[in-house]
Length: 53
Image 1 (cartoon, rainbow, N blue to C red):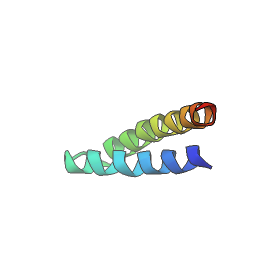
Image 2 (image 1 turned 90 degrees about the vertical axis):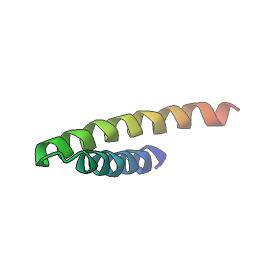
Image 3 (image 1 turned 60 degrees about the vertical axis):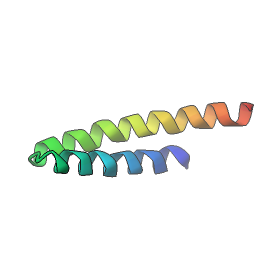
C-alpha cells in the first residue's frame, strides 16, 4: 500500500512542480510520471528497510 501512496504523492508533486515552472501539458505529464516512479521506488525501499530496523 505504501508504494501506491508514495507514487501518487510523487505524481502530484511532479505535476505541481512542472506547473509552477510554466510547463505545457506534456511537461506536466512527464514530470508527474517520473516523480511517480521515484515515489514508487522510495516506497518499495521503505517497505524493505523499515521492518529490518
